[in-house]
Structures are given as C-alpha cells and as structure tokens.
Length: 242
Image (cartoon, helix red, strand yellow):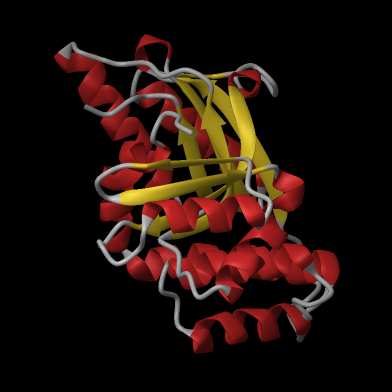
C-alpha cells in the first residue's frame, strides 16, 4: 500500500505551527465550540466533538483548555454566532488552495482572505473551483520512532477499517473514508496508539512543484499569511514542498 506522503508535505507547516501553540490552541478552541453548538457537549453522542477532541490531543492541547472550550460553548456565550466558511482559490503557478475558516463576521473574513490572495499573487475563486482536485479523507498520522512494527500497525489499521496505509522515515499515514474516521481513530486509540495528527483532511489528487524563486517565495508567504489569520482553521493545498 502506498501513496503520496501528505505528512511529508506538511511537516514544515506543522513545525511553524508548533512554534505558535497559543494561536493553534485558540483555533482548536473555536472548533470545539462549533462542535458543541452543533451536537451538544457530550463526545459520546457527538462524533464531531469527539473528532475535534482527538485533533486537540494530537496537537498537545492541555485537557484543561479542551474542557474550558467545551464549557464556554455550553454556557453563557452559547448563543454567540460562529460560522464555518470555506474559501477556494489559486496561488502562484496554479497551486490549488482550500481555506477553512470559523468566523463571527463573514464580511471581515472574506475581505481578509481576498486581500491575502491578491497580495501574494493568488486569485480567490468561487466555491468548487478547486475542491474537485482534492479527496476528503480521514488522516491519522503516527510517529515512526522505531518502536512500532510497520507490519503490525498496517494490519491493525486495516482490521480497524482503514482504507490505506503508507510509511516513510518519519511517520506512518493511515487514511480512511470520512464516515469511518471516528471509528478507526477510536479503535486505534484503544489499541494504545497515539497520534501526531488525527483529522478529516482534504488530500490533493495531484501535486504542483515550483522551481522558480518568485512563485516559491509568493506561495510560502501566501500560506503563512493565511495560517496566521485568526479566523483560518486549516489551509489545504497541492504545492509539493521540496
């Protein structure tokens, strides 16, 4: 079983995010609140909340922060209006980009996202303009630290309902159908595995490699600016980092 390594493609991004944990935790806190408002505060009956909690734990978010976000969404601020909005567009040299946001002001967020695309050589498009180039999959990443037998993990993943399995020097990647993600993740947790990442992701069908200096600089700055925006939860793209 094999496939393009998504983890290898985002390691650089994740490294930068790890240096900004406070911002990462704030964003995940918003996702927790959205999940609570959509399905209630009990993760056993709210699969979306259960998935976001797993994502928070993979990002090393403290349990106190997780519970505080859930409590906040269930309390006095439960009527705050937060929307999930997805934007699609192209970066330099036709790199496809999907931006997932959570916002309390869609006009502000739309203006900010459009400005970032324009500033760094991109074009914000209409809904659906690039999403057909991605597959929505559950993605579970486990560190390849030498303590886990690849064959054992692969068999465990497939027995738990995973679609595919791949490995590189740094990590094992397990992909699932989005509908099966929660069950596969929970089953692997019960087997004692811990995750570097666990989330439903948009995985590119094909990748774009940039070689010229200007578009390389532009795409790096565009993605950095998007990820630094407080309303942006996730940035998916098909740029293959060298």
